[in-house]
Image (cartoon, rainbow, N blue to C red; front, side, top):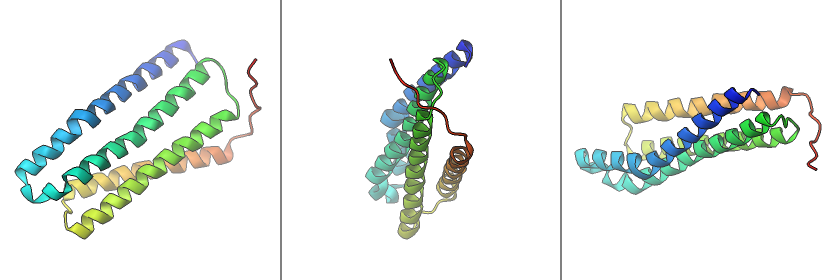
Length: 152
């Protein structure tokens, strides 16, 4: 991988990670509080919504950290079979996110809080993660076996 490309990807992933921490700590909880202020009937969902949001964002943060690790390995020209382990870890994070989406979808339906914006957001997020996970699984299934890299 070229140094410029590696640098740009690293900076982009680090900025993404900082932004997601900011979203977890300040933006998401504040947004939930604003919704509760406008619609007091959703107040019982405050804590579950914040916990769900933090967990959902954490799934994507883990994916970004894994991607950062892979970029650093590619930058150092270390391409071996351990990359498959990291890609499988990404699939695991995507599947965890899908489970969170399905759980939220079911819970909101059971509780009767099915506003179109939230439901469409869950569906879009879930399908995006499903497409990404499927793509990675297909990639892993069709990749030639790479040699083990030995460290000195």
